[in-house]
Image 1: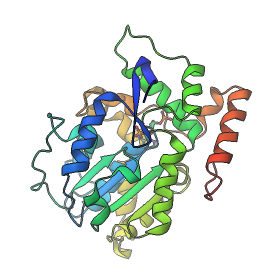
Image 2: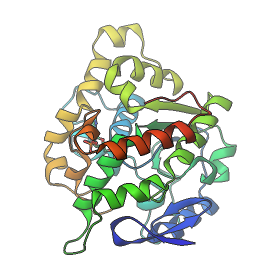
Image 3: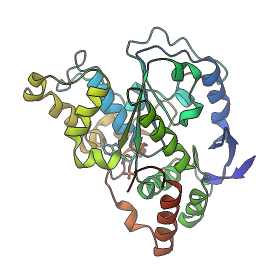
Length: 302
Ligand code: A3P
């Protein structure tokens, strides 16, 4: 089935989630042909949940012995995180029916994805590769996505009003939605297989990035040593990946990521709670009710 979705585009229901039409073929190709390696790292999320930040943090942490986080030649100072950690479904090739040779990428290979957990390739499910999921409160995720979609729509295409977009979001009709199924899929996987899936929250990262970064490094089997901690390595990674630092980089002010989206649109406010500036009381009530109902089986609260 298809539904009139975001940005005046139809979205298609595929394996119980909504997709932009151009993403279906690459997704099927990825599902059929992607060969995971045991040490691959997958950064998974819904759009606007904090993917850019998490890609940067995971890359800087994993590759810190190769690329010193405090040095001027660090790749994150010269490339956007989406270029460094490409998405399976949009970035890894020009031909949507073919996966390019990824076997020679430096290990551990790192990829991003917005695909829901059950739709990842079998080879990911069956290998020892690790998945880090970032979840963000649906209020802020929605507002962030609304701004992002308005920015990337080629004018003069009309965009949806906030209320129209909200109605669809509340029905779960948005790219990779419904959000509750997406979140629950990864949340359950993180409970069933805690060594394979780490579930993070944007809000927790904002509240205590030092703690969450150490947790992530531990999960990735590359914990920070005491020497690294006292020597300022953790602080350098946090600084390198901070919103303020990344937003001000030339590459993120004027560059484009692999999918042609201007990098600047990945950095808006970088705050928690901006939704209060947009939601009317009926919207707040409606979304709170949905979250309560749909996410009642897990201990997530926002
Ligand atoms: P806002 O629109 O609320 O500002 P994604 O990376 O998944 O596309 O999510 C984008 C959201 O994360 C945007 O939220 C963006 O500003 C915020 N963001 C991007 N980089 C960040 C960083 N380094 N630290 C914190 N938030 C960041």
